[in-house]
Image (cartoon, rainbow, N blue to C red; front, side, top):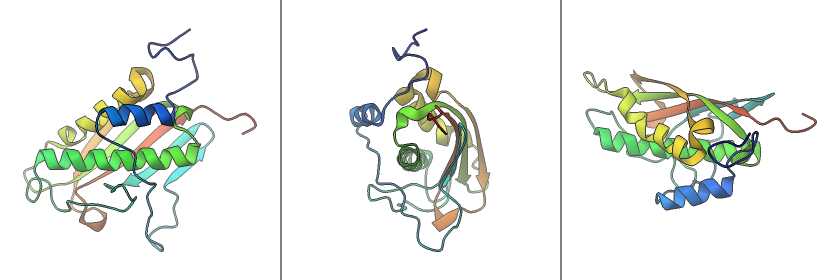
Length: 178
């Protein structure tokens, strides 16, 4: 049965379509994250069967390098700056998922998004930091694929003094023979 997106069951939104939808929002996918050598032996994206596990991503610049502003939300950054940083992290996450899956159309569903905020004492509006990310995913992929569960929480520190970090769990359309 066709979905509200007009796509047949089991197909998703292609990387090209995501690119066009991002362009309409004056956004674009950055280059995939170039994690500094020696930082981790873990994979940024791990695919096991139809499950996709995305390690924590910090805000990335267009070149795939971590980008500021760095600091503490509620002290060095206000909510709007934290939301922009969260969007940059989500775009980097999408770029790495695209590389790992070969195309974003392989995403069958976003399951869980975890957002971490490096927060000053007294700042507790963690969900608001990631609201634009959730809205973006639904806007890019449609309700059926883009809707997800989410948890957002505050932490004392994040890599490279970044204000936010995002990780995710997704389900992909299995490839034949895998």
